Image (tube, rainbow, N blue to C red; front, side, top):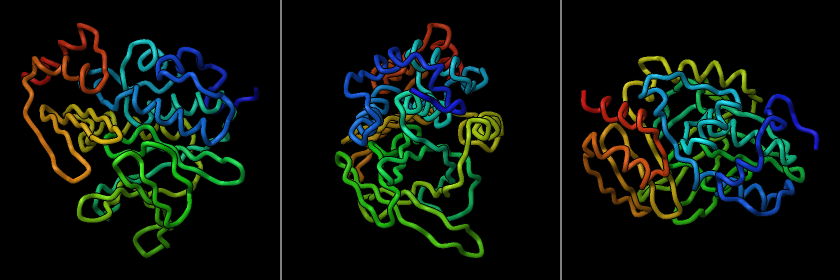
Amino acid sequence: MTTNAAWGGDQLDLEAYLARIGYAGDRRPTLETLRALHAAHLSSIGFENLEIVVGRPVLLDLESLQAKMVEQGRGGYCYEQNLLYAAALDRLGFRISGLCARTRMGERRIRPATHALLKVQLDGEDWITDVGFGAEGLLEPLPLRDGVESHQGEWVFGLVHETETETAPETWVLRTRHADDWFDLYAFGTERRFPVDYAVFNHYISTHPRSPFTGQMVVQRPSRDLRRTLIGREYAVTRPDGTREAREVSPQELPDLLATEFGITLSAADAQAVVTFHER
């Protein structure tokens, strides 16, 4: 099968990746396969920025991504997650493009376009698929269609198209329904992006003092009925009705919590580094 060199599907250990996410289904590049792969990846590989916490650079070459997320049982954030996922989709014959989004999280102010997501073309229609947004992220792909709404587990997602204004370009907005109203997650255009673009964005996100991922631990995991987050030492569970339970976790509890609630396996050295970081 022909792959796109930009996404590295020919370099992926596909069998190891599919075993990691627990996928044993159809491998034909169909919508059903895409949905199943999206769900399997999301439920198996947690969102985390622990490389930054333990003082290592975030590497985006496919060999490093496989070693970390497939072999070592770790997770990653958007660039890592979606680049590994893109390699698998590419290897299986999907037609993919990279996109970039501006995070909104309920606000309309213009943030830098630093979030990575993917577009897949199937039977003449475009779909967005994104396994790297964290707790409020999509649980399955969405058609790139104005006004679409999708019930995914106990959550509802939607896409709307915004026309260009003096302060914002023409764009698509992914949103989720909160208890009171729609909540904008991120806004994105359809300009194609490539791994080399994500390498530049990744440098900013992993090193700049204003990045939300430097200076604190950020670990998240969505599911069909709960959204789990660990920001710093605050562990929280949010339910579809908007109720939220939160508690502070001691530094010594963190490695076990990462394993049991987020499926993230740390080496002994990394577990100690996480504890030490939060004892400061």
